[in-house]
Image (cartoon, rainbow, N blue to C red):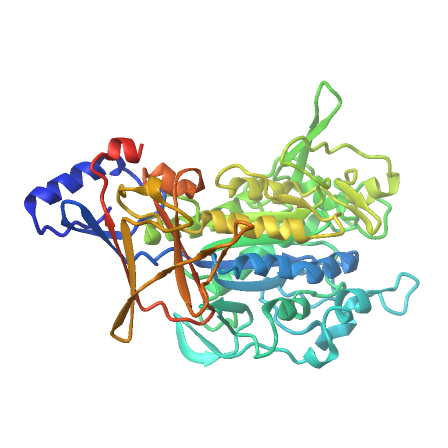
Amino acid sequence: MPTIRRRSPWCSALALAALAPAAGCLDHPLEQVHYHSEAEVIVEPPMDPRRKVDILFVIDDSGSMGEEQAALAANFSAFVEVLERLDVGADYRIGITTTDNGHPWCTGTSPEAGALQLRSCRAHLDDFVFSPGTANEVDRRDIACEQRCPAELAELGTLPTLTDGDPSARSRPWLERSDGTSNVPEGITTAQALACWGPQGIDGCGYESPLEAMHKALVRSGTDGEPGAGFVRDDALLQVVFITDEADCSLGPAGAEAFDPDGDQVLWPDPDAPVPPSAVCWNAGVSCETAADGSTHCEPADLDARGEPAAAGDEVLQPLSRYLEILDRIDQRKRELSGSGESQVLVSVIGGVPEGYDGHGLDYGPGDDADFLDDFGVGAGCRSGNGQAVPPVRLRALAEAFSPDGSNNLYSICNDDYSPALEAIAERLVDVLRPNCVDACVAGADAIIDGALPTCTITQEVDGVSHRVATCGHEDDGSWSLPDGEDLCVYAVTGDELHPTCQRNSRNVELRYLRAPGVSLGQVRTTCEVSDDPAVACR
C-alpha cells in the first residue's frame, strides 16, 4: 500500500478516498506516493520497476542434439535482444547447465549434475563428437560450435563481478547484464558470447535428467562455496528453460533396480535387449489412457520397478512433486520479499511437441515408427529433417504449473528456427516484469499526445543538478526513441496500451522509460495532478 505523508488533513482524506477502490491486494507493489496538495501527487521513486530476472537454461547434451544446439546458438540473439531493448532494460543473468546427472549406464560421461557451465565450445570441441572411432560416430563440431564461435574466442570467460553474498570480485559461471553493462569482455556482444557458451556438446548421458539437473542447479545456487552460488537472486524473477528431445529420466530411489539387466525388467519393452532403452524412463514416469475417439492422453506417474504405483521411496524416477516443491518454495519466498501477488517463477520447454503447438490437443499415440516406439516407449511428438523427439510429459506438467496466466509455454524442438520460441519466452518475461504504473488516478490522461502528459512533470537529479526528463520521440512506425542529446526519456500511455497490472489496479497512466546503456538513473521524481473524479477517470 502507498504511504501517505499528511501535510493537509483535508487533502489527505480526499486522497485516501480516491484510492479506496484499489486498496486491496495489488498484483504488483506500486510506487510510494506522497500527496502535497488537493490536486497533486508526488511519486517516489517512479523508476523502481522490477527489472531483475535470472534465467536458467537446461540444455540436453546427448548424442542427438547437435543440430538443436546449432539452432540454439544461432538464435540466442533473438532472446537477448528482447531483454536489452531500451524500453525493457532488463537486469538479467543467464546460467547454463546440461541434462547429464549421471546414470548407472553412463559410466563414460562426466555428469555436470546441475553445475553451471561457462566455457567456450571451442575449448571442448571433443565433446561435440558422439561415439568417436565407432560405426556410430557423429561429429557436430562444425555446425554446433565452429560456425558460430570464432577460434579467437576459445578462452572466452566472464569479467569479475560481485554478488550479494560475495563481496570479492571474481569471474562467475553465468552471463549477466545490468544498466547496460555486462560481464562480457569489451568488444564482444552478449549474443556472441552465448553463441560460444551455449553449445554444450553431444557426448552427455543419453538418459537425460533435466528435472534433477534443474533441482541441483537451484540448490547449488544457494550453497556457499559453490562456483554458482548466488546465481538466483531473491529479488529477481526466475525463468527456467528446458531444451531437450527426450523424456525426463531423473532417477529416483529405485532407479538402478529398474535398469538392472538381472532384475525383473518389467519396464523393458524387450527383456532380451543388451542395454535398457530410454523407453524404461517413459514407462516409469508416465501413465496413458486411450479416449473413446482413439486419442491417447498421458500424465506423469510415480511408478516402481514393477510398473505399479510406487510407495514413497520406491519410485524409479524422482517424483514430480520434488520439482514442483522446490520451485514453489522459491516462488513463495520471492512473493513475500517483493509483496507481489503474481508468480515469480516461470518455466518453458523447447521439446517434443508439434510445430505451431498452441497448448492444446497433444496425442501420445504409438506413431508409425516401430523402432522409435521400442526405443522410447511412445510415438514421436514431432519430426524434422534432423530426427524425431519424444513428448515431454513430465516437463509439460511442470511448465503448465508455472504458467501464471495459462498461456502456452511449450515450443517445438523440431522447428529449424528457434528465434520465435526464444522471442516468445523473452516477451513473456517482459510482460511479467513490474510496470511503472503511476499510483494514483491522474488527471488529464486522455490528453496524452505522442507520449507527452501535460498534467505530469518528471525530473531527474544527478550529482545535485535537477532537470526535466525529456519526452521520448515517437517514430512514424510507432516505435519510441531517445531524443538527440538525451540519455533518459519518458513517454506516457493510457487506455488499451496500459500494462494489465495497471489496469487491474485501477491506474490510468503508465510511464515507460528509455535510457542509454550505462547511464545512472540518479533520483527521479514524478509530480502529477490528481483527477477529481476517479470513479470515471480510473474505472
